[in-house]
Each structure stands twice: as C-alpha cells, then as structure tokens.
Length: 307
Image 1 (cartoon, rainbow, N blue to C red):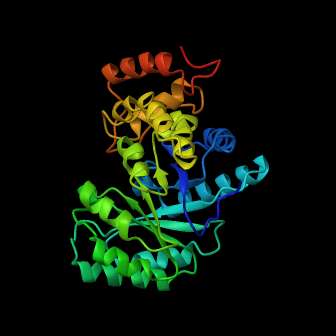
Image 2: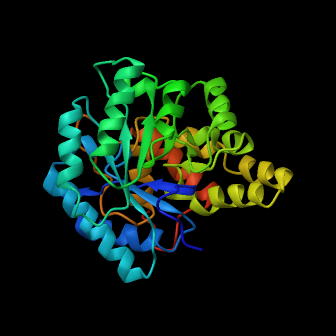
Image 3: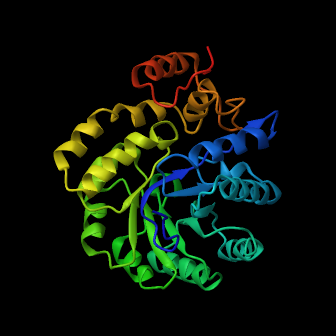
C-alpha cells in the first residue's frame, strides 16, 4: 500500500547523507535508496538533522533530491519525499520554498526557528507565512532542546487548522505535552514521534508513526512494532519492542549520525562513515560496541559486511 504524501503516517526514515572525500557520495546514495526502497518504510526525509542538512549547500541539496527521486522511480517504489529545512529568518525560508518548488518533492519538514527564541505568536506567524509560500504539505519539527524554543500545543493546534500544515515531528521532550497533543489533535493532522527511544510509548498513546533514525538499521523491526499495534496486538508489540529497545540508545550514545554511518559502513551500504565538521567519527570504544551489537541483533549486517 502506498503512503498518501499529504497525510504523513507510519515509519519515516530521515536519510543520512553519505560523503566521500568531503563531497556528496552519489554511488553510496544510490545504493542506500535502492536498499530502503525494499524496506517497510512509508516516507523519506532528506537533508534534515540526520542528513546533516545544515552542512549542505543548495546545489548539493538539489542533487540529493534529484538522485533520490530518480532511484526510487527506478526501483518502482512510490515513497513520499520531504525536505528538511531550518532557519531563523522567515523570508529566507520562504525563498528556499520557492527555489525548491520545481524539485521532485512531496513536502517539507520545517524546524521551529532556532537561536532567536521567538514568542508563540511569532512562531504562528512564521509557519503561517511559510504555509502561504508553498502549496506543498508542511510538517512542523518541534525540538526545543536543539532550537531553544518549544511550540506549545495551543499554537500547534492553531497552525493545524491551516490546510497544508499536516503534522508534527514531535521531540518536545515533555511527555505530558505530547500525550495532550495526541488527545486533542484534529483529523488530518499527524503526530509522528522523533524520539526513537519513545517509539513504542508514543504509538501506545496514539501517535501516527515515527520519523526514526534508528530505522536505518532496524526498519523491519520498527515496522513490526507498529503493525502489531495497528492490528490490536499490544502484547506482541511490546515484546517486539523489547527485542530492539536498546538500539536507539546505542545509536545515540555519541552525536548522530556518526554511529548510524559507522553501522551502515560496516554493513557495506556506504563506502565511508564520513561526517562533516563539527560532527566527528565515532570513538573506537563505540565502534567496538556497534560491532558487537551487529552480531547480536544481526540487523542490516548482510553477507559481505566489512570485517
């Protein structure tokens, strides 16, 4: 079943951006997209936090989108593509929406303005202006521990009334706020958790899915948890979650996406685990832990994985 790109739900993957010698690694990107086209994910986010979007220039982002869309078409998979955007200048973001209007995208994931810490009304006007600047769907990315500002539920619900504000990636770090939003959200507005470690908890509370970086190495396992919930098998979903619940903690032991890139490199899906400064490669200690966990979980460790 194909995902309706205008109503985000299910398991979405915030795709890493592979690099080689400081440049976008097109060969690894094509390999990644072909791989995940065969995995049980419901959408892709490009150039967001996990994709190191703030280190990419506009030409690289356009190239990233074009290659991903082309490879999905070649694989015969219709997956919605959302582009991650962030910034504190509403005008610049509106221009970015205009510049990307002709790109093969289905929507945007836009973070709350960072550093400037605007008021709730300021954020309402910010997102309203951006919604007016594009006909495409917008998901709000609420992650106050990165941006320094939290979009409260009153403001979120006001924005949810706009026709192309279709959901939120919820990383509020406030479970009471998240559960209140799940209780009050209107039809047609999706709440996807962005906290991998809370995937099961949020689904139990009624979330529509997750944007889950850990699904790079455990897509089928995360999808199983969601499908069991959807089928009404709460005990089965909990048992499935217990089998993978340590994975997010491992992959976020050090700043993401370095641990994920190391795992994907060991699995042979990307040619290097390279990240861009200020991110650093994983430590030797974490690399050893990941090596051990690959053997334990045997998740995404195909034949030919690197010794």
